[in-house]
Length: 381
Image (cartoon, rainbow, N blue to C red; front, side, top):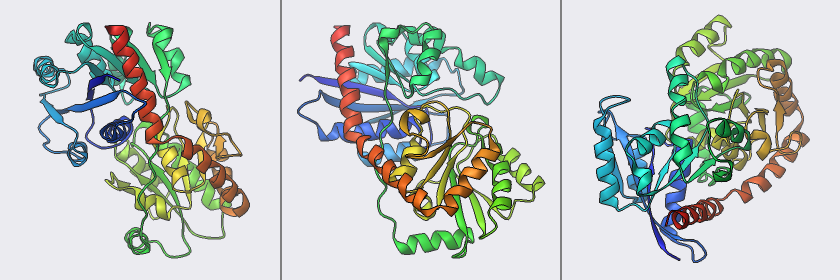
């Protein structure tokens, strides 16, 4: 099979979401598989003067060639020339984009005319009016891509409304690589750091603190959980950073939950948090195929999540997780308390969830994406 030189564009500073999936693909590309195209991988990202980030450090650890494009702002015109230079330097056969901005830059620079282009649509964030307008750039960019991948079947309609050819759209769920084992000493240290005694049950939520992730709903639901579950102390830990942090802190103060809700911030290694959690809660208003859902299931933690986006494509409520409607704070509280009290249900959900995780390996993800890359290059030639 032919070698394909792939340049992946990532607009991120942390290794989460789409960035994590690209790095998993890069790790598998370094292994090579006889039944898949050989992928020569490189990555390009952007720097606004912040220097090394969690992402650039992670890329260097795995050894994938990395280029960093300097930019002065969201629409720095000098980025286009730099990007063209990187594409030429890496002799890329195919460009793989993973965000609205990257999609736009490939089309703006005219790179789709000389290279194959696969765009991955991971959904949108709606933090403000500016971002909602920014998202509309996909209407101009994505129709020019050779293939458009998306992490959830629920996004297909959205892409068609942006004039993406139905035949070019392919649904691709995210991969999961189980965390490295966490020692008992690490677990004890983290519990001490969080101020947890042996009787406190830990409820965990991991994700960017932005409005569409539903953290305000979760905090209000947690207040109801404490009322319903009077047998032991509960602690809610939110891992992640984002524009909603101050609002969430204010909500916790107004509900007198500051002693029971911990905002742990961005964590480079979230494995220890999963290892001590009794339950994982995902209150999102919109999702594709959330990595954190797969990570929680891989860690052996029962899940309560909202029935949005690709979540119901991955799990079946009552079999692998408990699903509730978005904004249903009472439903989420009742489901969480049910899991805390019903040990048999917890173990059943965990057992079936492991079967799902076993199918979503980085190897399977790599082979699926590599095949799509091969088809895009063949069609382009």
